[in-house]
Length: 197
Image (cartoon, rainbow, N blue to C red; front, side):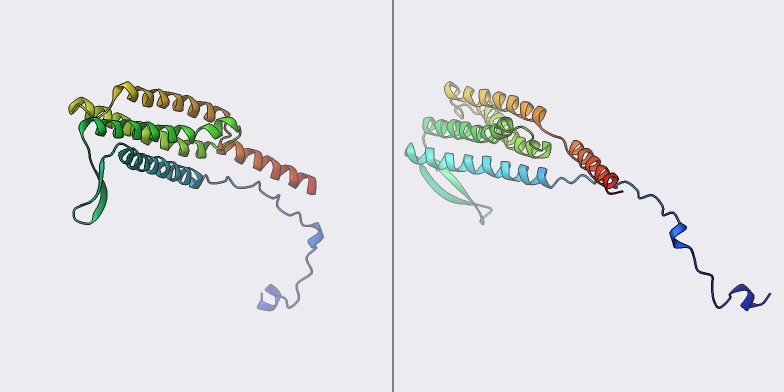
């Protein structure tokens, strides 16, 4: 058999109209990204930390404490507060209450507006977690070295933390999860494809 018989110069035309195309595959599974979670957590953490710093400076100024700028390791600046023990406990207590309140306020809107994304709610919950950690750390400091918190007011921070936890759970129950969004989006695309056929 020669090459000419194996590979003729002109091939017969292919009937393209009769070829059935492979069915189109459904949309690929969407990879879950955590950009909203990271952004919300970063924003919430920054909010509660800036609230704590602002409250410390404001209360220290109102109570007549001396505020200094000092340097840790010679180059990292931080605020130093020079105050008597009563003023110091007032500053720590009320700045912590302000911090917990900021974490709580971040969760009010997701409760009032249903349908928030679950990742954003978890991210906002980070602010409440940081405030809780700060409150527990200061309570531990008070237990080891007394005169850190004023317990006649500090209980309010604990109450606000419990209220914030209730708001977080409520917001999560009202939220829409990312998998629900992906499934509804996939259903809409499949319906659109069927209508176009």
